[in-house]
Length: 100
Image 1 (tube, rainbow, N blue to C red):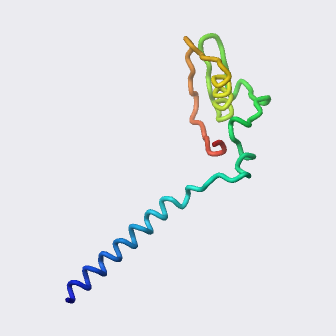
Image 2 (image 1 turned 30 degrees about the vertical axis):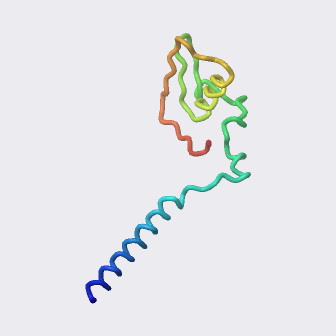
């Protein structure tokens, strides 16, 4: 009887810890709110400030250096530019934390 209580206690503790772990894993996953749109959805981005430091194109090679440059490149592709026969280079690590 004592072993049965101990086993049930251990199982309950293990279940509780597993549940806490799952909650911890999902704690950072939130549902985007209406205010998130102001932070940087790419399809709402204005590309008037794109410079050669963000996205450079020269001949057969285009170079993406920033998140803004990557967003600009995505808008060009979504607009119909295929970049067929061209090379696109990602020149730096791009932090996409401010974009969705």
